[in-house]
Structure formats: structure tokens, C-alpha cells
Amino acid sequence: MRRPLWALVLLAACAAGCNGEPSTYKAGPTAKCLRTKLHYQVTTDPAELGIVERNAANGGLLAHYPGNAIRIAFAESSDAAGGLEHGFRVFAPNKLKPHITDVMRTNKNAVFLWTVTPPQAEIDSVYGCLKG
Image 1 (cartoon, rainbow, N blue to C red):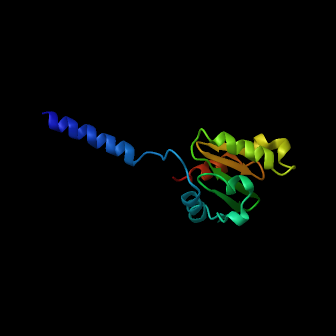
Image 2 (cartoon, rainbow, N blue to C red):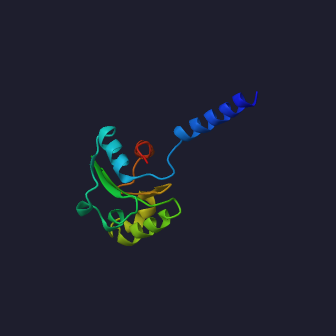
Image 3 (tube, rainbow, N blue to C red):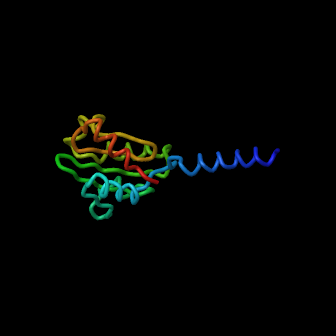
């Protein structure tokens, strides 16, 4: 009688771990999703990235789509994302600095900097492409 109970607990733990969301997001898999699912033009080439996303622990990317662009930097953990936010505040173009709170978002370890404030539907679509 104990075996079936342990098997059920083990199966539930495996299912929870297998289908869970990653604890950290990364540039490579996220870039692939943005290209294939949202049809953005995306680069992870360090020569084309800004200083913040180029030096982020889990990589960075620059994604373009009509009317806007997103810079995403991936910290090593959600606790380290604050450092990337600070970096974006320091190195943001002067025209973005007055309204940086409108164009910067953080989701776990991913810090986003849009060129123009995106509509919520766009934010949700991009968040749906975050991969670990």
C-alpha cells in the first residue's frame, strides 16, 4: 500500500518540475522564439548590442519590429536584475531618460528597455517568448 502512494508523490513531483517555468531566462532561446513566433528581427551579436545587454550574465539581445525596438538583458538571477536596471538607467540614450520608467520593465532576471512605450498586448507577447 505504501508503494502506490510514493509512486504518486514521485509522479506529481516530476510533473511539477517538468512543466514548470524556468527560474532564469536566457538570450538564445528567447531570441529564437521572438524570431519564429513574433517575426521580430533579432540579434544576439555582441558587436550590435549595447553595453548593458552585451555584459549581462545570461546574454542579451536587440529585437526590432515596426515602430519599436527592445533591448533585453538577462541577469544571472532575479536578485541581480537590479544591477541591469541601474545599467540601463545610466547608459540609456538621453531622449529615453526622462521617461525611462515608461519604457523599462523587469520579469524575473530579464530587464527590457523599449524605444517607445509598448501597449500591454505587446508586453504580454514578448513575455510569452521568455525561455530558459
